[in-house]
Image (cartoon, rainbow, N blue to C red; front, side):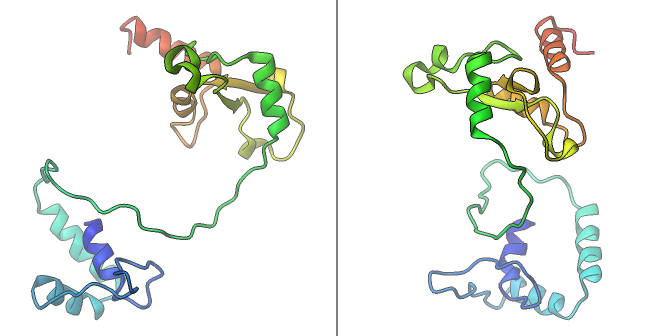
Length: 180
């Protein structure tokens, strides 16, 4: 579905998405087949009409086998977002205080990767910056060091950030086969 959207985006001037382009910045040729017919039909339809047609197709289709399919990736798009400021000094201090062994699972990058992993660890804010606003950060009490996997797991649910205790409990339960 995304591949179809990418092919059509280049032909929809009211659209903010760029779609596929060749080396000269031109949209790909759509020929005279189903793509051309669909483009002709959809260019005259409202967004709601196109979405309704797509929903009808999806509702009446079987799940698609993805083995052997090719996906288009690597397009460039501009994104505007907020980024909360972080202190590199606080990060270095947290690593100095807590070390480079994950406080969630005990993983050490250097032990696993050798010299490549020496000194590597991610630093996690125990209270998400998005919820607290600008303020002081104390590396010894406000920051923790986590491996990349644990850091991703504490932030897996965008609406809730796991505490270190919750993360450790989830790991303990998984190791014990108690995944209830």
